[in-house]
Length: 160
Ligand code: HEC
Image 1 (cartoon, rainbow, N blue to C red):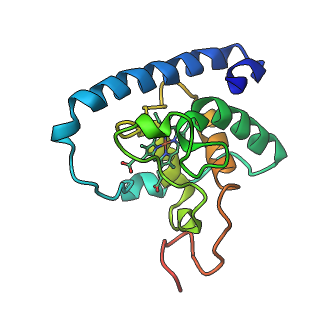
Image 2: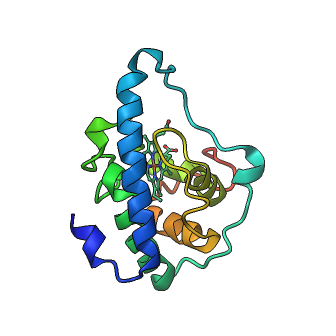
């Protein structure tokens, strides 16, 4: 796959291997656990985590870094544009979120950061694979995937 070869930073290889391994094990577990699948429920970050401010400036540098990490670690499931149509998506027991939905702006940066760190089966846990700074960079990039709905106040999560 193209993204695995185009990344220059050697540290990122580890992440690729990790993501592939997760994809495989979850794929198998998914087959076995088909009958025991829990009902779909919205995934909500704890309020305290959601209030955490983003310490990484939204600029060309952090977005470029975030895009490279996304291509390698997220694209297999979430797809190149974040719609949830990556090559691994059809084999997952749950559909990856649609990161291009303007509703993404109803969640704070802290909430997205928390979700990326914690993961939720079949989405891997990224807090030990990506540094804090890398996870904020990914948040900054993910923000570019969805058009911002101006009527949404991102600090409160409600429409005024
Ligand atoms: C193995 C596949 C897989 C990989 C790799 C993956 N995700 Fe996910 N992701 C999912 C699935 C499945 C969900 C839906 C989880 C749920 O709602 O139960 C999800 C949900 C999310 C959500 C929540 C969307 C919402 O509506 O709140 C975000 C944000 C997200 N992923 C970002 C990322 C980022 C960023 C990466 C890379 C660092 C990543 N994901 C890597 C499968 C994956």
